[in-house]
Image 1 (cartoon, rainbow over the protein chains, first blue to last red):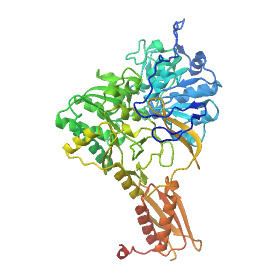
Image 2 (cartoon, one colour; image 1 turned 90 degrees about the vertical axis):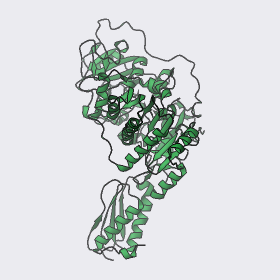
Image 3 (tube, chains in turn cyan, purple; image 1 turned 135 degrees about the vertical axis):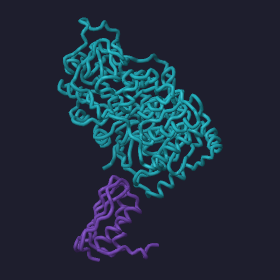
Image 4 (cartoon, each protein chain N blue to C red; image 1 turned 90 degrees about the horizontal axis):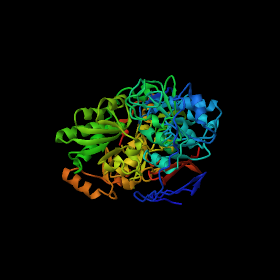
Length: 518
Length: 97
């Protein structure tokens, strides 16, 4: 069958039943109550949740073959929790688990691949897979397809019962012995634990893994003791250098700076750029530069933002300190400066990823967002975005909150160079469609800005750009320009085997990824 | 023309290519490509190398491309320079159109 963005897919993939994407805003209402596996429980009888090691905690949870385990990725590439837990599970001989972290970061020694190879894990659901695991999956490592969901879709899947978690392992940089814990303080602070909240409230059992046991009660507390079954102290939960040692530096690449500056100009030209506006920029090189240019435009015009949303970086903290933004809503902290800031300032808040991005709540913060700046690997002439697969079909990124921000923000701005090396970024048809073009307002490149005529605010943007003297080009022009530099690439050949399913934020399938023919 | 030396041109920077042209007595043109985009552009890269070798009348050479995503015009320029260096001749700017 073919979905609303023209992608062909089978009706059933392994045990996964496909519901095809029908368009944004076409999602069905969910009438059933929220699904949670959490049960009423009379605490531990001896008031002791502390286990001597991971194995004891795993045994106490009663984890069995075929169950589902979850993790958050707030420690990013510095994560040391996943490997330790999976190793303990392997040593206990538990097999065929469904591995459902908020994202698979590229952990090595041991890599996740080894746990798939020995049968500890046989299903994966996450926001992205890359590195060694991504390569192995694209080459057909798994029997069942990997299910990839954007940040807003994961809490939806958990609360609708599509993804039911038996045991959630939550790494925390500080915890007390009764499970009150946080990522904001401690030697390996990662900042917001945004991704872990839904796991804590919906998993049948919750194990806190920490390397910094503090006196009861832990303060500040992000995740409350009422959700926690066991607490384990390990030597180290993360590598602080890889969690994000300092602030990400401003790029010096003139092309990236030019794109960032144009994106800030596009924002400043919009009538929505006014006192009390809101924005989300993100952590890519162009995004960080764009944040700085945006701060300049705000200072020039004397405009202040009401809030900034999503993953935070040091330069947004800087804007906050200058009084340019009233509240920072942090679902994630991208560097050490942003990680520590939550505990330091009352208006810098840690938020649940679900309130940030889940369309199936009584209101997500994205509903209130004016401007979202996004990155992408490819954009096509229908404005569809690929944020997962690279030039040769390899897994390059994660969905993150991209599809959510595009859909939720009034104006979503894709910042992208027309070519990267010899790889065209503006193409006739994206290899993997992750974000539907109808939710993308404009594409900003070094060779010009293309407005999407099918976006709901096209007329408004066109008028505002004309008033500000910003010239636009067509997306076809950018595509032709890219191909004129690079030549036409040979198409990527695939087999019929679907190795990954790409879900949209409403749980429908926007695309599938097939095994690459070698 | 017969190659006496090995000629190298280019760098390993992103968007560049390092081309090495070395002697390959009586064994034809042997093209070795190391590139992340060889599946997409390998054939075009070979055509460009062959064309440059023909222009310099080189019939026997090992041509190695360590490509970091160079555009075709860059590959051609680096090949021409590497060929000049391997032949020990200067580039004929008058021939440029």
